[in-house]
Length: 304
Image 1 (spheres, rainbow, N blue to C red):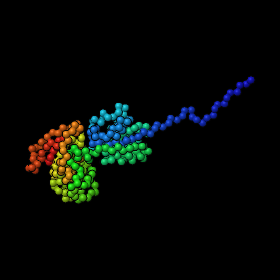
Image 2: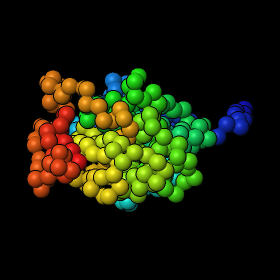
Image 3: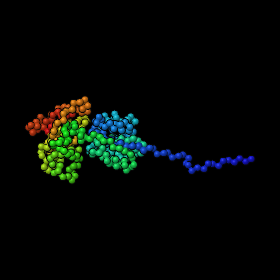
């Protein structure tokens, strides 16, 4: 009797099912604060502890490396002023690529991501690529520098307005300098150490008083933190200059001339800031119209 063999089972399914795409990752744009890891927010720390990929800026303190998980891939992407670094488009591509591979990505940014940090550009790139993300605010050098110098950004009798400006190209922009020179508001200049003399001269030409208080705070919360107090006329002449070679933030206005905040003496402030040390500058005396470095608040201070 002949044997009938069964017909092969007809199926349209492929021999090997396709590999499902990896689950979508997530990007956290985290503000790291002005530089010291102890000024990182609690939420920012938690995001770092969960990260599989970390893309840090260049100006972060060395202590941040201790916060990265041992399994995390760390790809530095920041650059210092005037230095070379990854193009911004490449930073966008790195975030998107790793997120699409399923990674928890932390873009660790100096200060606050949305204060001269290109955080909005990075958020736009992520949104355009369909990548879920969040923005974790950080402590900006705006307030950290003021606290380091012991000055107040506002004062109800002197300044009820704060204007934040980008200093490195301020002279190239169309500005109403008479408005900037008007008395009252506190002007805060980011990235203005090199351009400060020219900016000060423009303010003087626009009618700002020669004795307008000016404060330069360098390397905020870092090991070389230094505070320099001066007036607008000295800044215009070039006598007010950076001494650390690091980043700095400049405060101008009547409120910047106040020194009402007491010098920090807590264990936290002592650990956060470098030790106070007196510095001398060619033996000048403010009373004689010269320069004198004196101990300052939470770090060395130079008075011009």
